Length: 423
Ligand code: HEM
Image (spheres, rainbow, N blue to C red):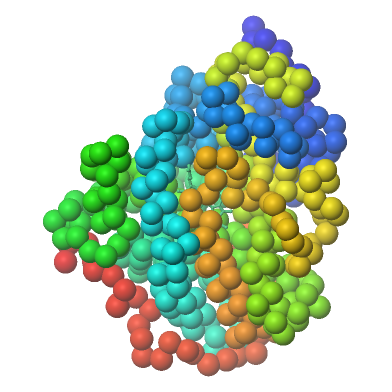
């Protein structure tokens, strides 16, 4: 008979009820049980208050990110239930093993490195908007293609195949576990990614190029080069981290700007305000809603009896609306500053791609506002992710707008930016 946990809450971040009402559900939890136990998915702790989340995400000894298949079954340690992905470096490592890998990732995701990607980001935003700009009616979720194409291009993979990566990595965190889409991602799309990326690593060993994959082949970790499994592990994580999150941020922001035309006009009139506004969109929309840890010791945490092997969900989304940390937390203030949101997480695992994600989001929002700033969203036919437990956002955003002109000219969307694997 398992030992009882308390306090017990009725909570399931993958439920339809949660997808519909997660802001209210988290508010109630913060007020009534900021650290609570739920029996869903085999049982886990939900950490919803900012202070508790801060303490948990900075205590890597008690709240391990490591892969512990013996607790909660096999799979990705940072989701509940565990997603069927390869072992992901560095997100599934604890210190000290974590540090040299994270240093290797930082070298290609630091602000200076991301500045080098400005032209690539602009290219894809311009090009994808070109595909819809003349029509005056489109699915604005096309912006979701940009982070996928940029990430794939940055790794030196074939960006024209970006949709396959979305189908694989993004679906695992936006579809309900057990749904046909989720099963397809796990059984078909992820194996395709695995095969393609592994072939790419082998190819780049023979044919180095100016891309992030070549960086990971050459960089030293603890005084040695990485093997194919380690490199694959990093690339799969970067793809899964890079593909869906920024799209989730931008689709939610564009809906909010449609619903708040005065604020939209302010950003159209002064695009320099977009940088600060994006921080607020990160706070209120928290694209990555919550991720998990495994408890490594029998002890008490914020008054609760946590036990070795217990799983815990850290809700960045909930902490981002904690009134003890943010004034008027449910008000979207596009000038809010300072804005110490935790949309990118907290502690040593804080998002390695935050600069890239923000650079892409700013360019997408600026271009949409400049080129189709009068867009009207058909909210009756907008489709949000059926599961908003890990990632929140929209699959489909039908819009109408005043048609405009293409801007890429004769430059093809894909052809010039990659060397196809095997070539
Ligand atoms: C708006 C966009 C994004 C959001 C909201 C976001 C969110 C997050 C969060 C919350 C974490 C913390 C994970 C944890 O503590 O367990 C994380 C980690 C990570 N993200 Fe992002 N992410 C975004 C964009 C990106 C992009 C574009 C990349 C691609 C380079 C990326 C790559 C990573 C990696 C590699 C980690 C693991 C870092 C580590 O374990 O040290 N992310 N992200």
